[in-house]
Image 1 (cartoon, rainbow, N blue to C red):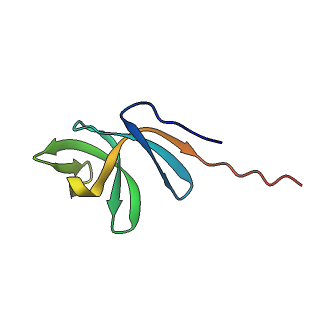
Image 2: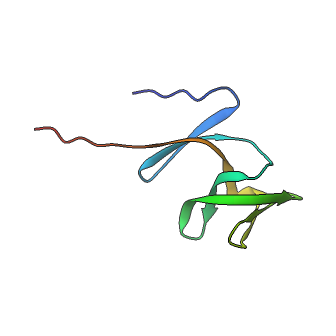
Image 3: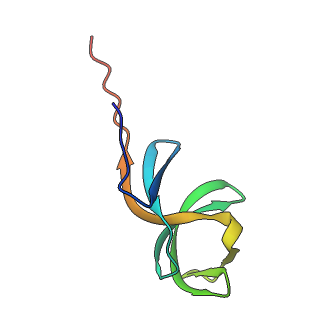
Length: 80
């Protein structure tokens, strides 16, 4: 199966999900590269290329993969 993201968006696959990511500087759900790997993080504000999460963490722009435009969970069906 081939999935093509809409214009100005890109795909990223991690663990059991595929994400369509977009560039954005507004609050919302983002895919962020944290110490424990890629994680969905709710960003509440963006100031001077620093993204602030609702739980008090701050991430520089180079750790933020992008705004989550859509997320799909992979489903594996093992049929006999």
